[in-house]
Length: 97
Image (cartoon, rainbow, N blue to C red):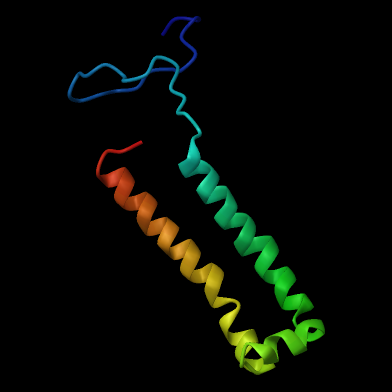
């Protein structure tokens, strides 16, 4: 291994060369979708749970009790994170970037 080889040795059994010389991938709208999902799940939804008692009249206008809102609100980021995880796994499996 030479001193100018920054990436190090990677054994490829098929003998194929690496697809990209620099090894970096582009951060496009798919990456920003994941970032927005994580921000919603870890900042927006917990903040909404903290502010839920103050918004009790709004919750009642939707036809929900406070207990219903406390049960439903955490499900939103859970479903969103799950769907983004399945989407990205299917995309990676199909060979898309």
